[in-house]
Image (cartoon, rainbow, N blue to C red; front, side):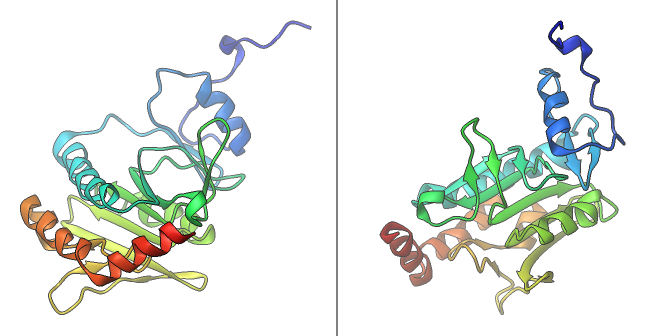
Length: 226
């Protein structure tokens, strides 16, 4: 029997219904494809990404997360990583923040260098509230126990931060100073109004306050003791 060549493997098409295994087989046969996702068994291949509605907001998110990671040993960020979530969900979120496996995190890095399981925090940059991110993806992330889920709806100028409570998500409410504070990652503070307005200097100044908080210091100590 002749071995199957890449040319014999069907391409990924939006709307295909596949298992994660078949999705990965087809994805790996398309090296020029930069992003594709399997959500609740359905393939999504996004259109080319625009600058102001995706590229720039995405860059701001990575700046915020990268600053947190730099001074928090035991956590790791990822930019558009493929996540093997379950047999019918292989998303490629815009950003993830996870606790390293050796520090007690709930996800692991596979032998072939993919995330397996649920990162503690997932972030998606969406065009608007009608995006898949607030429907099918949200359900899949919730069911697989992603602890915190952030969705930036760029065109709607809205930022939602969800916390897992039992089997459902609840909205994280800002404190009296209008700052959103992660429950899973102490010290990860966000001035969401400043983020929406593009004031990254203020976003990073507020984050620095979180990084100098007693909660963040205690969190780092706990991670280092595991």
